[in-house]
Length: 369
Image 1 (tube, rainbow, N blue to C red):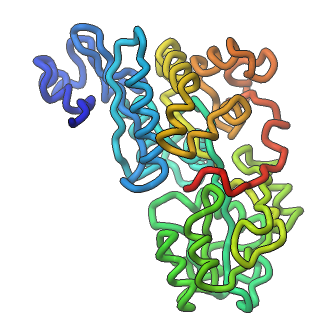
Image 2 (cartoon, rainbow, N blue to C red):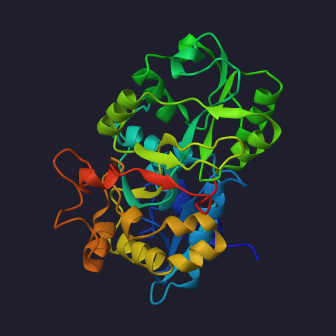
């Protein structure tokens, strides 16, 4: 059965045509006012959850979240539907335009969007609702390639992720910290499985691969060729973690991938998180946060990465202000850090710095991306 989306509602409602043409009407200004869902005459709210292209982890997790919110609405008068999109960058824009009310995004991309930096045309008024699973990624090369550091990428062909996916938001700072830019090598844009093929046939010297642990693409690469991870310079890594809240130290245990027997000291380059409009109604976001967190086991049953929804991860600071509705719920439950409010004068979430510092130990049981 097809789920009724906000767009379906606007198309079929008696007031929908006028509202769509005029951008307002009947008290329903969804699509023009960020954070305000479409609302029926009876007060039912139509909430759209932005995900990513079909088949990706954001699509799966976002769909699970949508299903669980719908199934556990209690006294909340809402209809929730997941919507496939082109990913984080489009979701941020659709949150800002009011076409989505809750969206999956990579926190490194959100970080720059919220500040209007890194190529964004303006500062997008978004808030964090919940931090979820990590993206643990690094450059992978074949043994014997001669690439022993990121500086060795210079002059090579290197996969930097799918075109338009936003990988540059977390790759460029990493390269810059190591004295490398995109101009120093030939960037190749490709998805993870395609880039494994390129690596295997020698079409590229290295590929940026990662996600949850184990990452399917890295497992595939290790099963067909001898691979190694290109190490991060420890000083550069420490500087990145200090400068950007979305980076975290992370350890991939030896034995996770065939042929890599020693622990690899890498990084979470940007956790997945849920975002909403900064203007979103506090009570609505409170109820959504409550419903998601208190039914997280059901989400995890539908999508394994949902296991990362827990007291420690959910309030983790990634550099994007938390919405007051989410903060209210976390504070009531007792795991919002201290007695801090949603944002400090600098516009950052107030989860303390130590929340992002400890290394994450990546284990095979963790989420796949």
